[in-house]
Amino acid sequence: IYDQADLAVDEHVVARDVITDLDGVPQQNLIARLSATPGALRWNGRPLDADGDDIRRHGWSPGNHDTPDHV
Image (cartoon, rainbow, N blue to C red; front, side):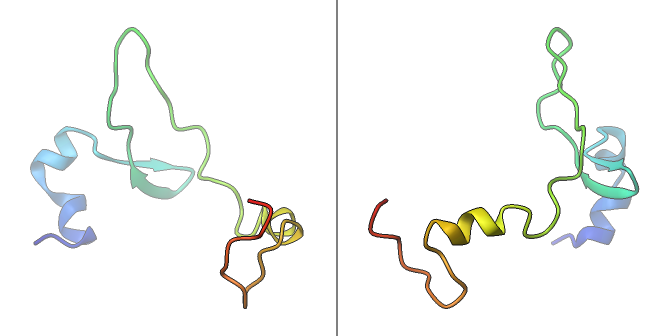
């Protein structure tokens, strides 16, 4: 069983460019890389809690994991 360190240096994984680096953050590359419609990783994701205010406004709170009544 591989851990992340093993995976990053595996010959096959390296040859297939399975792990890529985006702005200094290693992450899984795109699974399907098609020549006619190539995809691209453009950002590392949104900052932690970027949508937190909106989520809490709709009824979720850290102590309440129930589904809001209006859903």
